[in-house]
Image 1 (cartoon, rainbow, N blue to C red):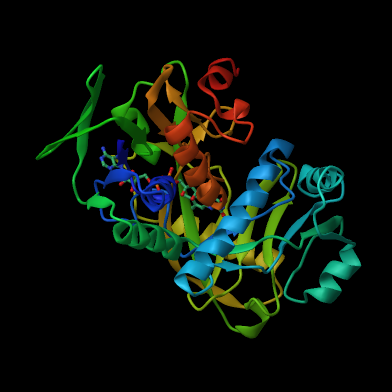
Image 2 (cartoon, rainbow, N blue to C red):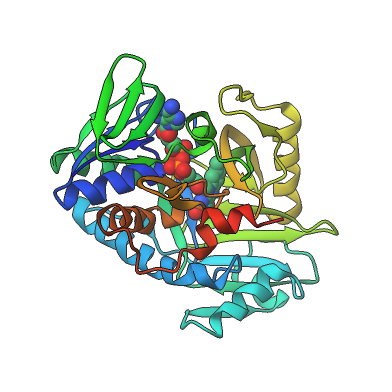
Length: 374
Ligand SMILES: Cc1cc2nc3c(=O)[nH]c(=O)nc-3n(C[C@H](O)[C@H](O)[C@H](O)COP(=O)(O)OP(=O)(O)OC[C@H]3O[C@@H](n4cnc5c(N)ncnc54)[C@H](O)[C@@H]3O)c2cc1C
């Protein structure tokens, strides 16, 4: 069997690795040379969480994903996952702290609840509002995003995968003879196709009536004065919800590039081929203010980068064969929370391509479910 993977970001690089490791003949094609700065998979780090308020069905996938991230760390002989824990901070009635607690009723997850007083005592760098409490997901942490993709692509090459980089796929056709993929300068043939083109997915595939929205996000890094206070030895990942509109942001400790802080959602809807990649002064000022409001420390935004969320209306992933054709598999979009799953999504996709089945319940990720969502 021969397989082509279009798009070698988080999902595509992982499935390329999984298939090539199993001895499948596989070609991976990308319009850039991943990891790159133009899609959804860059910016040093990603948050990994297990007490997943987005849906209890995600938890078995997360448990397997974590095993696979540890396996990848062993294979590359250096850590790509740092188990710092993830601290959710919000009003005691907010879903950010109530939702994860619900998940722990069904799954054995190591966690701790923190009162407002415990929060500020344990983490002097934080300045939560008086009504805020904490839920500490001890199993969460940080993934080094570019290292993951580089490892997957490097190992795939060693396992015999062919990588075609800086080459745009223009079109593809499925017929009784198999799959034909047409790029700017060549044609490739295979038995099966995986389309993991992230924000560009609808350039290659008509998903109608499933709607995708591409959302511009900005990551910021703060040069903090007291670096120790913001290092992984002193602070876990934090996620916050605050105010009447429940706005949210998250922070990732300083691993040497600065203290990372970003809003989650609320970005402008854009087109991947026409993204405003400049960062406005107002966006930097907004983050500076956020930092000064919720942290007891001094620091200045020193670096900012844009990135793209590819959202479905339900915020669930889309992982399914295209229009019932079990030779064409769509992976992603992952609605701004997919990276942590990339390891298990690659394994799932390889199983689907090889056997047509997965051991996980993928109902929420099906075309049918997305078509019926309103
Ligand atoms: C700012 C930000 C923060 C995030 N934080 C988190 C987090 O903390 N935790 C988490 O779990 N998730 C997080 N996410 C989400 C996560 O990063 C994404 O879900 C994931 O990286 C998406 O991977 P992908 O493979 O679908 O897309 P991408 O990695 O963008 O890959 C798509 C690839 O397809 C290629 N391509 C597209 N069109 C073509 C074509 N025509 N021909 C050839 N190649 C093509 C592109 O070049 C690209 O390399 C975050 C996302 C952003 C933007």
